[in-house]
Image (cartoon, rainbow, N blue to C red; front, side):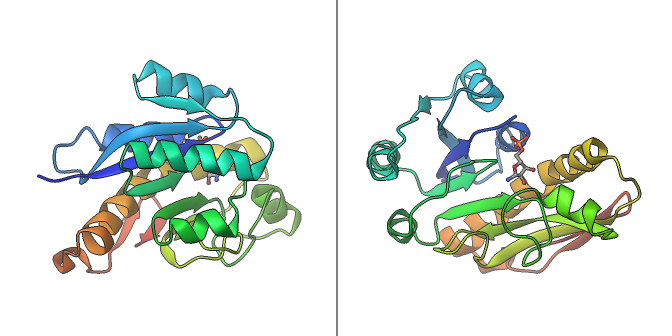
Length: 208
Ligand code: GRF
């Protein structure tokens, strides 16, 4: 079975990286993780190394230089799809247009609500009763590309750590599923997978 070459970009804990790694162990998962890029030393960087992935730490402060190096590494590894997973650096419009339709991101809000940082805080501060996450294509505008998948749940606690853990638990289920679907439909053009899915796990609704 042919597989898309994936690169994960991460700057944080790495729970989504781990979820993609776990999903890719399934022989029917249509992607192979070939390269992890981190812009700083972080748990995700250590995790990638411990899982024996080729892992690049590229911490150049100048975005142009950073992106030239990243582009070279991606090209060397013949990467088909970039998955941003807690990557805390905004990519330039030039880079995004070079990799048009080949960059996915997971963002912890129900977009288009709450693009940008501190989404959990904003949810709690505003007393919002529904929260969730979105997997979307990356375009030139922050957190604004085409929405590919989302989940939503009722906010039942004001505990921000609980909220973050809960979000991640379900992100780790959503992201690999959306990656799978995106590879089949948009990279491999297999329309039998195009069907819209709506599932419920616990009392969380997923749609992708
Ligand atoms: C996730 O909540 C994701 O939505 C956001 O950053 C967080 C990364 O978590 N973009 P992890 O490093 O994958 O655990």
